[in-house]
Image (spheres, rainbow, N blue to C red):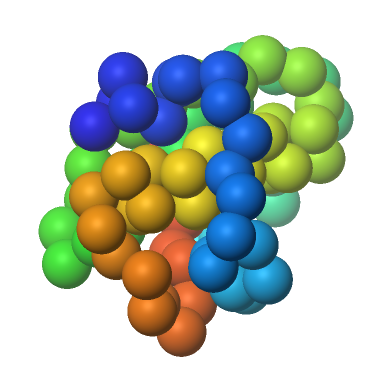
Length: 92
C-alpha cells in the first residue's frame, strides 16, 4: 500500500471532496506537542487497520496536503468509492 500512496498521480473523480481526518494522538503522546514545522512526516492510512506508513518531506502543512491526495488515490485504486471520511494517522 505504501507504494501505491507514493505514486505521483493526482486523483480524479468521486473522493475529491471527501473530508480527511488527521489523528495526532500518537504523535502528541510521543513528542508532547502538536505536529508542525519542517520535517519528514509519516502518515498511516486507516482502513479498518493501519496500513504501512508513507513518508513526505517538507512542512507539516505541505505533507498533509500531499498525504490527503495520495490517500484518496490509494482508496480509489482499491475500489473504495463511498467513504464518508478518510482517516490518516500522523506517526510519531
